[in-house]
Length: 355
Image 1: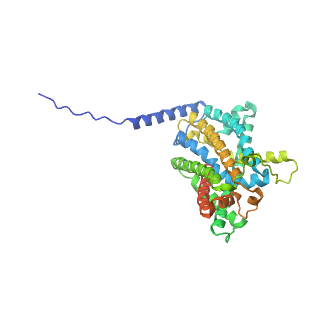
Image 2: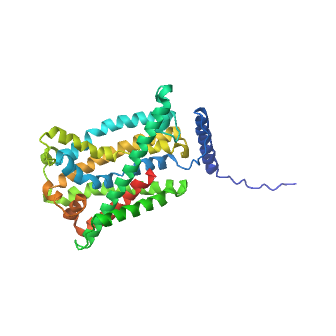
Image 3: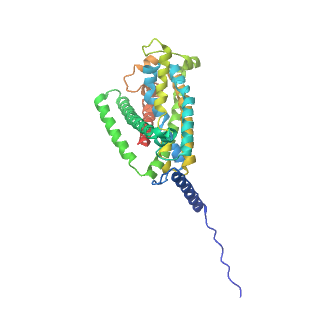
């Protein structure tokens, strides 16, 4: 008697293999934590790419430079040299710090991060003190950093309002402070979201940040047209507006801008207990985010330098941020408001990972 043969239907096991791979990574991460004396208590819902996006979003290039252009042109070194080389020179040194931090995050993938690192690197007798000092120094810096980011976000909003109303509505310190408080509240709510939501949101915002940076880098020199300065001026023109007679010290002050920008990349270490494959993902995120921000930031600063025809004229703007005036001069009101709204969105993304 002939038996009927049933066709064999193959099953797609790719999803099953992916889940097993994730589970094996989680087991390895938890085992490493156990070796360090920790018990894993967080959900590992950040993938490697989302961890990179998390660290990259904190150092959002286009919004950070837009926030500090006035500072580097006027308060710090004033001029094209500070804009270009005040960023380019510190980057290799920041990379050295990032490399050391990445190595520690790889060997000690715990969310304690800097506090744990300092305790382990210090002599056993002084480990608690080292961790205590590191913790308080870090939280003090975080408080001031968060407020400074949201204050510049408030300045961006007031700049957009002034341009949108053709200067009829110019908000002073009081309304700006009110916007600052509103932004702090907004970011507090955003930081209270579930880990999975934050992971996906950061990936989306990182794409916007990258796109906005590339767009600004291309738009400014191209649309500046005949108003572009020469290569010699863009890279070597030095104008000291600090009031200091010592130009060397004035130039060194330009380094404060990238130091403000290159903050928060240790966040990849602090979310390592929420990251799958943290021993590899966290250090990779630290190195890639710092390297990409360093390169993109320098290229954007060069583009800005070529686009500034007159530093004194740009600094005399009535707008809260001179970067807004630069956009307005080069691409007009509609173009300025379009890219400025994207920049505001990027600045929002720069803040909430710090929560």
